[in-house]
Length: 240
Image (tube, rainbow, N blue to C red; front, side, top):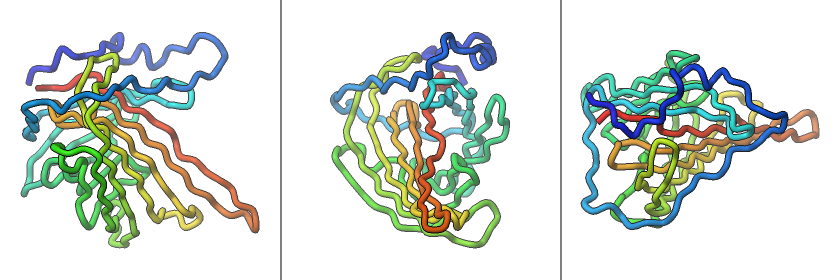
């Protein structure tokens, strides 16, 4: 497949990830540049095919530091399931994401351990409408475990936006998910996660995705608030 020329070149891929930042001050990542826009016409949803791939730069939002380059590729179409393999430049195998059908998450590996859902979780709702919301109550399993843990996902589909990142300008649907779940670590209480992304039907995946999670633990009578890593994934290139 031919890789889109909407590619953001990262000086040989490895070089920028190892360069120190100039100055001592910690600088948080600037907000995404996005403005409301009209729905693309016609609305062409990309069909999943083996070999399609997307490259993302994973960035620490607390200090703007690039973490690694991640490639996600459709590696198999099996029994109605789309297998998306994920590998990082440094962390190598990141596990598989499974959609069934395209646009419905059956397994998500972007967690401490891969989650497999009893009911699929939509990546998006009806793209012909805006200001939609839906809540999915289901359960998930970790890895090969047969034990199920509850999870609730509330999806808010905000509207179409024109979003500009170093690799180009895209028209995408802004989607936010509020995820409440029982963590497999029983000391973590009231675990929540915010998943915010801009989904482009043109590329069949998000252009930008941001994740952030919170929970608390108890030390005797004292509550200790905890926070997960705060990541942004920005599209660098994709194959057509």
